[in-house]
Amino acid sequence: MKQVRIATSLPTQLPTERFSCEWMEGSMMNRWFLKARLAEALAAHGLDTHWIETRDKPRVEDVVPA
Image (cartoon, rainbow, N blue to C red; front, top):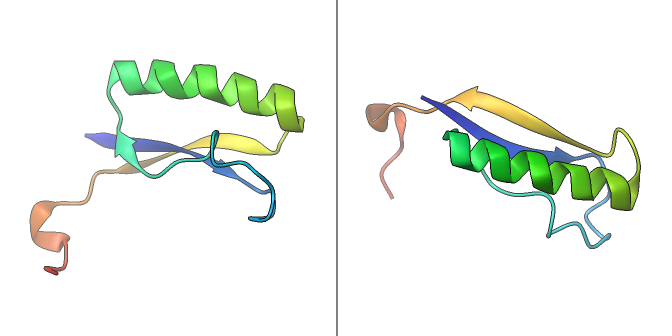
């Protein structure tokens, strides 16, 4: 299973919380949601400011216990 998120190259001082997000499951619904949110981010901040990243979901035994 994959995980997805929106990342940004903008400085953290700018109000981009609406667009950038933490890793989430790469389900079809989440991918659809992120594509719509990415379109809004690019319209608000310009091309090449935000993008969708993917990664393999970490295995449970690889996660460090709290």
